[in-house]
Length: 221
Image (cartoon, rainbow, N blue to C red; front, top):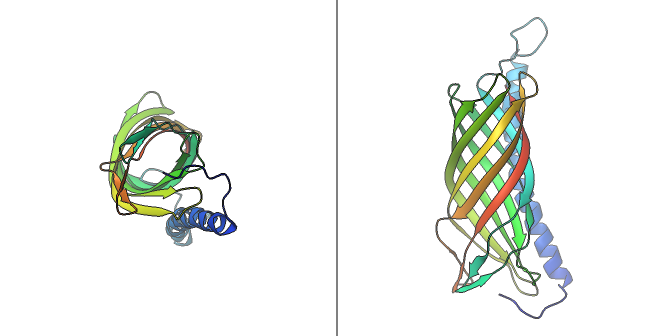
């Protein structure tokens, strides 16, 4: 933990901005690849007038973003209060049937240490599974969770950044509302955490856990 610094140097600002851009690039790249797959379905004839209609029953793309409010977190044996932050992500998945969905997700969450300019972020690459509970023709509740790789990154004010990959896990619950046959709107709550502390700077054990409220759209194809 870095204490007493009030201003970042231009070099540290550039490094932090470049790190954020790299994380955004990972998620946008993931969505671009998935979008190419969707485009391939259209080019093969689906959704073109006079040809096979679009199927909205199996595969889907999701985009989401929202509010992060983590609990107090441990940094190398000391507990610190955390600021509210933000999150965003995307996923590509498949509905195996009316009850079960599986997906691959790229998800980013960022927060800060209260009273300091130090930042903590997590980039999660997760395999998720969901169990759907139909409420009405348009409304479906769901619960699920996931496992995957979680990059924990600490960006102190006035010192070099450090990051490490750990095993991540999350639990998720929410509701989906069918706006159209192929588009669903959802609010969602999730708890994301590393299953172990990240070892940063060779000696510092850094905990990562978040509580996140998100909203997003699911596009079926």
